[in-house]
Image (cartoon, rainbow over all chains, first blue to last red; front, top):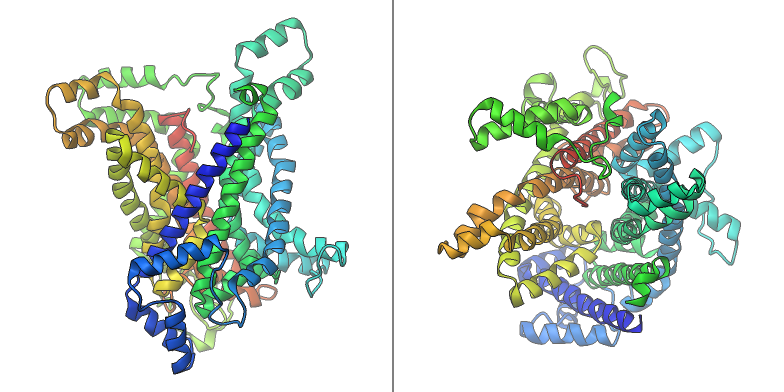
Amino acid sequence: MTQLIVKRLLSGLLALFLIATFLFFVMRSVPGDAIDIQLAESGLSEERITEVKDEMGLNDPILEQYADWASGIVRLDFGDSLVRDESVLDIILRRLPVTLELSFLAIALSLAFGPIVGMLSAIRRGKPSDAILRVGSIVGLSIPNFLVGVLMITYLSEWFGYSVPIGYQEFWESPWVNLQQMILPAIALALSVGAATARMTRSSMLEVLGTDYIRTVRAKGADERMINTRHAFKNSLIPVLTLVGLQFGGLLGGTVILEAMFSLPGLGSQVFEAVRTRDYPLIQAAALVYGAMFILVNIMVDLAYGWIDPRIRAS
Amino acid sequence: MVDVNQHLGSPTNPPSEVVDEDTDVSADASDSAFSRFVGSARHFAKTQKLGMAALAVILLLVLMAVFAGVISANDPALQNRGDVKVGPNGAYWFGTDHLGRDIFARIAYGARVSLTVGGVTVLVATVVGTLVGGFSGYYGGRFDLVLQRIVDAVMSIPVLVLALFIVALLGPSIRNLILALTIVVTPSFVRVARGEMLRIRSSDYVRAADALGASPFRTVVRHGLPNLFAPIIILASLTFGNAIVAEASLSFIGLGVPPPEPSWGRMVSDAREWIRLYPWMLLFPAAAISVSVLAFNLFGDALRDHLDPKLVL
């Protein structure tokens, strides 16, 4: 088990290194004058532009620039924001907790309903309720989350006169206000992940229900509820976990739009702003941070396999 | 809708299509690839009703995009100042927006934009991804190892964040949007093609081709790629839906298709201020996005049930 963790951490670090390299070369593959034009458009003064170009080391040889960027990352030094008078690292550290809270709330919500919907669908296979749940989950998968956000904001106030409290409050300042601000975007994000989870649980559970050991349990005389929950459901969760890990990336992308829409001061709305102001060092570092979060969550998923399935723990 | 119950994808109930396909083929009395395709398509039409409905919606969208100029009487960018925020009626089927533009025309021309972005992205990603993945799986070794690590790395950056980064660098335009989305979705095609190729590399017919002295290129293209058809076409359909979502999302936040080109995502964003009084401004573009994405997802799903029920994508 320890060996597995070490191995996964090492390959995670390698992936991070490759992401950093990839981002660097995407950034530099844009012709230099395009960056010039965009810097000119950004409305910075002449001196600031030369300064910025110097800071970004745009006049150094490319390998030297790369070495600078890579060694900066190791020291957690992502440079300074082009727009704000602050280091990129400070901005990220200030903004990240909001995004973490939102994305984990969304994951928790989708895990709260996705697998159960999938299980019910599998148990009632072929019945009308199964059809409804299946169509419902593919519809949930197909509605873009920004649309869900727009609809929620509009119709909650239209029909129920409810609007989200203005002015972001952190959880320990005011848990109730904070939850109200978080829950709607979290639901919008959880809808597609939950729907994907439901679909995966259904097909995985149907597979398990067809195995010999389920037949054995049934022949032994265990009651159906016991078979479904204890034996089949638990054993169908591994592919579901894998899926949640993979869906986490899409969820992080969704936080960018939803944080901006619900005025949550997270990393996503910061990225949104940075794209508008063309604050490249910030976007680049944020993309790296998102990559790191994705990798970390997937390592956690791998470890959770061992928790669910003792055979994996042993090997 | 009735046929949702017919679940072919379950491994507990192996699909009977293999047998049916054989009888179909022998009925045609020729074993050409074309007649096999016809047989398979006929079987698909018979068993996947929901998939056929989805296909019909997709064809309808394509027709709408191709004939946008014919079916809509008005210019999508024309601002009819006299007819601002008019509800759906005979002249404006879907009503007009806050600038007096014909929403039906904008939906139809928006379909052109969405399908172009989705289509070009998926086409390029399919060709590049399948070739790169195919060769990577065939050769294996160091090249494969390095390539797969790069694919893993690119796939760990959220699609929308990476697309935002690229569009921010290059500036919003349809071409840049397609470029960004292509970079973002190609890795999944590489991964799937590579996995399949790895699986069939040791099969007898590939080894026979090698033994007969076929060049690696010929082995991969002539013998390998046809076997990648099933997973790749399924992935392509699902990716098409995702590309439409990504285009709509980016246009929604003003970084996708630049005006005056009509885009569904931008229409939703324009409608936000007016929804309360003029719900049709939101209703139609929202429905256009959801229905087309749903159609591609359902079609991809039906294809999976039909071609390769065990495939996990």
